[in-house]
Length: 627
Image (tube, rainbow, N blue to C red; front, side, top):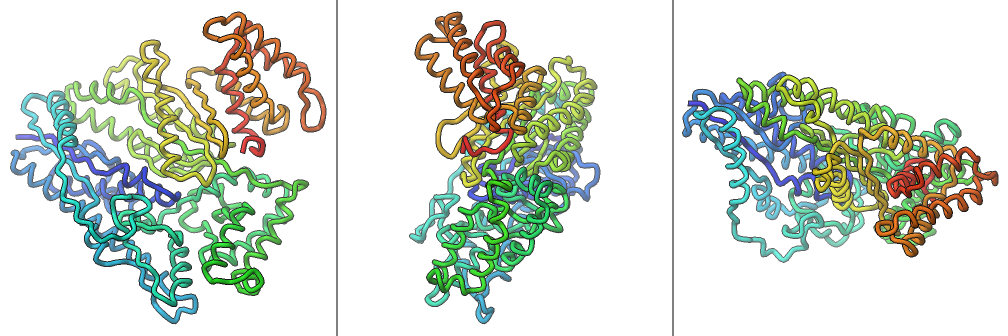
């Protein structure tokens, strides 16, 4: 008898969404993919033909390959009765647990070389072995199900999906045994920290060792949090500060190359003590970081102040003694090299905002159901799987080429970071590549063209100090906004780009544009370019937003549309006539007319166009006025 098997691993929230630093997101994604690969490899070695994923080579499923695998694995077990299928799933569970323990051992191996005093005369203690071991086997969630193929592939697939849903909702809970009364993890408040308090006399050295590892002095981490923070360092991860500063660095490389070159030795001097990270070797895939291969946090004067103060407190030094210390001298050299670039006559300060991109395929359920109904459902599913894998494996290069950085790409799920000035190009590139890869398999199973898979992209624009868990939640909200399931009856749902911008202070801004709305996308790109070259006043969108709110207080746009539109157009024309560019010149008459036609087309006030103008302000030029 043949069985259809499925394994789902988690917790996705625990591995990916729970994050305080960018490396938590990167390596949480890496760990989940490594566990999923181990599950797929285990099933394959036990005679199961893989459907999701369907790698070209078995070697791609080996540990630490570049292949990224989603957390759900499906396979077909030909000639296996239920007992044999159950044995394959039990073996899979054991192999996943073994891979997790190997990753934990790697984390300890990564930590060990960094546990030394500044003078390297003593080894430092950091990890509580008893707590580490107690939490070791209480992290990975493993769900599985098996159904016979006796009634056909489509029926078995539907039954398997139903069983997995029921299995995930039927959980057992072990008694809570953590009565250690230790501080709780900063990432997971239900688990105790595995980090020891520093022994008397070692406080300063332990704090510095924590910084080398990437753990803040007051931060607490459980086993899973520690593994996420340190394992997988063979992968290159881009700190959010480097993404935020990308446009400023590009300008510096073009306009002030000598001043940018002077920063290189200043940053290099801070690398040995972990105050700066050199992005080399494993970062080769991100060609756009080559002009300044460092994490960039210390390009921001306020972050220099914060790091300097942290180290002064670590070593209990006053300002004078600190300046005489070797680390203090290195920081002062950085300040001296950075000052000329930060001058307003040069480049000014880099803006501190970046974008997190979260994308998900549309109509995938319809494609998978249609494939399951094919004459050879398993083969059709493998074709879909290979198309998804081809898309997912191409995402890192595509995003790197577009100036972004992929964190995770598994199937139709994409998570990444993008500099603001590259955001539209990166998102549009992903959309086009997804349509290109999925179109042929949709046609092969006979889907109508209107039901072909598309890609909805949600983007969160945030300050680089925003907690990463909150940023991902904002990006998830933007993704839901892009899908807009509430618009399904109108046919305007999905296949869209949605952006939510969250200033450090003030209200959020949001905008949604469908990928099929060519004029709106073209207008958005043009406005962003106009802001970037100074052809539109930077404060214009926010002034118009305030005027829109004033008009709403006079006439409700929903109850008195004509009156509202007349008032809005009159105020709009008045403001545009008075606006001046940075050089003091009035706004060009043709530009004024184009703005009026876009923001009040055919005499009808357009809030959507105003939202696009607000978003274009975020995408073009310096953000000093909105930060």
